[in-house]
Length: 543
Image (tube, rainbow, N blue to C red; front, side, top):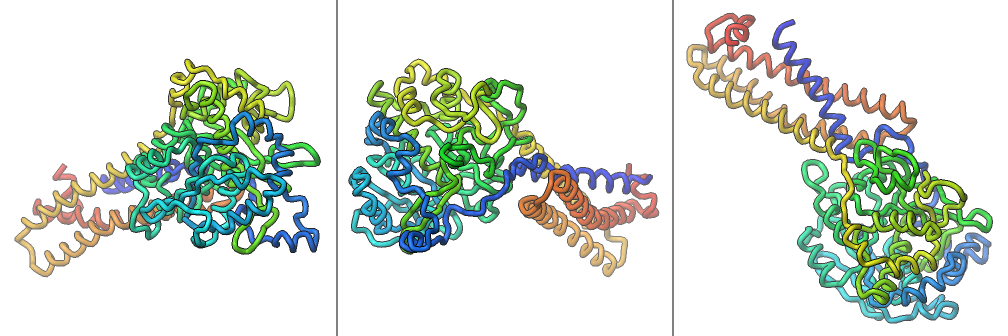
């Protein structure tokens, strides 16, 4: 086999590895079907009947109001212990700044008779387009959106005296993007204590526009890692491929799954974003200890909270909507529960709870198992689909309020991360571009010095040489994003996904290798002409 063919097959093999490293470095879990966890028929921002219509036609009549939610979830003692969240500020990451203050106030007024604390004059602020807007109770509508209203209204139900900060993290077309420096200043000035993100991490348009996951291709994910290491961060596990593993590299973050009522009991719901983060993040020692078995990769969710049947009511500019459910309901309400615990801890000790919420919750479960309700006794503390389980609000807040001060420093220890696919992806890209640059410079100089051939032939050689030189990096980046797009949209069984992605990777590598092979033949011809030898022997003599 000639050296040219050997180089071709070697380059083909490198491109195949490049495809797999590309997918894995973006946290796309191709190797485990449990990352899907099924889908939800009802999304978090639906177009459901209004409250009046629901009553008339007996649709969603069982959806929870604030009072029924607080009673079913046994929140009264937790709220009293946590001073209803007074002194806390809950930050809510949203995909845009769509929020209606009149709709928010309508929600509070509609249920104020049964839950007077909803009318507590807490402060609601929104950061968008580079500015922080402090909303008064008479503020006008800022583009209605059910997702932001769901987060704000139900975080307010759980911690009615806590202030709310809605943070617009969608970066598409924004003239003042949310950079890490701006985020640090914003959270510091707003005195944020806890953060929640119900943003679906795996939706393709948000991958480049969500600063929590920005620079995913060739960068460091610095914003996500910094946020999780400095503030308690609760993420919705989501219900689409890619949601589970894209953010699991942040060891301190807590992934919140969904639970629902089956009959009169609150049961874990294995329908949304659950499974192992294969080749993305290793399981922590605490998670392995809680699971009672040697887990290799990090498993999500870490906890579950109410987010399913029968749903809740929210208010937006269309009126009152019923049947709203999903992990995007579970994450902000769990963050509000943690804010109650933080307020109680400040009252007891004078210090806030540690920022590493993940380690804190696992240590809490190991030391005080009754803080969580796992549904089945005599089982490991951590179980698939439900993590540590549903918290018992009163016990949860009381135990955390007395969390010893000497444990605060210990709980800041980071978990071990498995980022080698990301490193290999960068290394493979740098290697390919390095070889390309070397050959462009070397053979470009040779071609420039080639004067003993006809000018027309030299012009044609230049055209073929430059065309190949420009095509290679363009096709390489096109291949990278084609693989990303395909891996995001692939569905089916585990075997089907792996085989389908492998075939697509082979096809893409074959296209790029074929175009590169033509360019390598051009380089070989240049080398042969330079050495005044037969083109079929020039490369051998040069070597």
